[in-house]
Length: 168
Length: 174
Image 1 (spheres, rainbow over the protein chains, first blue to last red):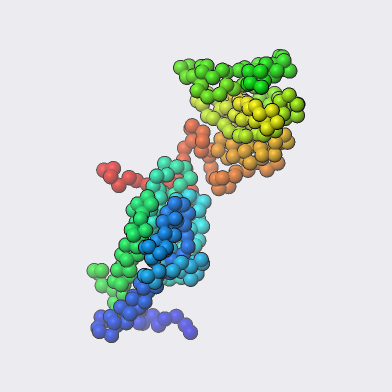
Image 2: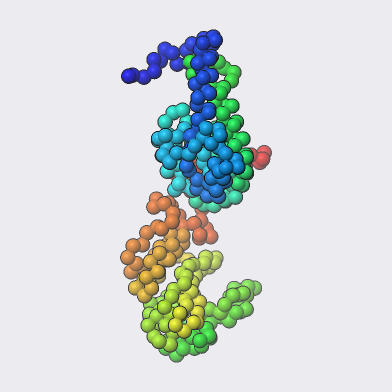
């Protein structure tokens, strides 16, 4: 009941068995990305629509969870002010590894329309590391679905047992 | 009652104080005419007496303080009261001119209209005007450790707030 034996993590040569186990783990992670219900402003409406019947995020295995403890994806949707950014960081720290972040919309990419404002954080990547940026104001639900698919492709390239090489 | 009549009654009640009336379309600054409603300018010392009279007397009966804000011009900050009466169905705009020096203080009208509680907290938060006699004067919107009063014209943003940078460089600027 201790940690995963450190001698196995990122330490094995890439043969048939280890790469198969890696791709099984990656497939499991990518096909069940549960996202935290987090929406601040207008992009939250598009996030809700992306979970709706037409652009269904559920067919990717993605359901929303109300608590960060059970989610592995944080979709930051909406304008983030400095006051809120402290809470977003706290939510991000409460998510268990492996965790991913999608920044949805202009406001969380770079401050967006409200970038001159004194109380607006100019991009959520000043506080947490972001994997995928989705441009748009707001991005269409299909764009968010494409972002999810891109994130799935990114996850499937990850290595767990196999040694990390310099490329990819 | 029209604003002009209210102004005339005010002048009758306080004959030795400088109360002025600006008609719609009058010049308020060199080259600038007002476009909105006519308003009455009263000195700071009369604020509590005048507003109490407005609330309590039957002829005025201003039972609603619609709005309490401030405007920052280069040489002065104006505190603006918008009053409305549900009984008499008349309204009035009242302005108080304050000089721009630190610290700026105004008497609080929270005893007259309870809604002034939050309105004065907002003006304190964004302009830095303290209201004497307020029961809970602290920031209402911005975080409690924010430095500066954003809606003043000479506000400079801090470099960072609690470890977060406040600027982002535009990637197309080379």
